[in-house]
Image (cartoon, rainbow, N blue to C red):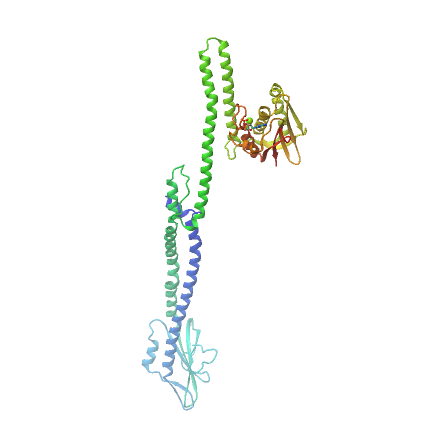
Length: 464
Ligand SMILES: Nc1ncnc2c1ncn2[C@@H]1O[C@H](COP(=O)(O)OP(=O)(O)O)[C@@H](O)[C@H]1O
Ligand SMILES: [Mg+2]
């Protein structure tokens, strides 16, 4: 089944090699057998012509000249019979005097267009009745009278035609049929043998465990295939790195979830031991904090999964007004800001600022930035400003007048689960990683800079 498919598949390497090799080899074979056919035919015709010349010479031996130079053919019966003795072809002869008179033989055997030279035969094709003939003309000069005679011997072409047909079959047609088959079979096995290392390689890779991402050894791998195996090796290395990052992420996420869940368990046990509602209340409050933390973490994990490149989560990208989205989100954060005594304000464009994006993801991005500004940045009495600028690029920023981010932390705070030391215990370190993934998903870049040289942080998302 597999072998059959390999024979048919047009995109198989074997089929392509055959396709590129067989036709040119066939053309070469065709041309060379045609040349050998024409050469063989030339030699055979030459041999027949030579025989015709011999016959003309033996006929010439029977020619006598009268004293007035007139040629006379004295053909003994035996010689005449010999001329007729060819079992296949008919032979004609004719003897002409110098004046062109037929002295003997068939007068319808055509004479050469140019007179034959002494001792040098002339060959030409002619017709006797309906029969095509090959003629040899020979000029005989009499030593005594200095007179001459032209001797013509013609022969039908049956033998020559049969020979040319036989040569055509043996020199041309047989190789034409046999060669393609022989060449294809040789190439087939040759290519199969040549491709064996690839099959071996495929077998070795197929036997690997899913987590074996080690490099492929060069041993037994043909030189031409090594760039491919090296590229696969590189890919495997990147996959291994991604896999271990994924595993670290999962264990970190599990670790982060364990803390609020442990709180839930402890507070539940405490509540169960309580005798009256008043003693249960603090435990319930703690329970609420822990379960909110767990819920927030789960929500963040889901958002991160959704924003990641190549995620299967359907993103709903469409043209939307970022200005409206930012203002609505700010309004939602006002109660929390009031509670913390922070002045939360919006500045910038009032006209619609259109971007192509996912409304939920963009809201989540801004939520994280405002949450950080209120949580880690602004102090009571401080302020948080959300700004949206249209040019030169659409730029969304959230600034606070808190302690700011030290320079050495500015790139690291965007890593997953990274939190600066001394940060308040709530939170997971996923917020800014989410912001970065969502920005990237929208073709934007996020960065942070201080608001003043010593204080404050400005988180800036630039859409390019
Ligand atoms: N506006 C800010 N001012 C000061 N520090 C901040 C600010 N935003 C973020 N950070 C620091 O960056 C860290 C990472 O932030 P984030 O990824 O949102 O995690 P989380 O808020 O869960 O701690 C925070 O723990 C905090 O130390
Ligand atoms: Mg955060």
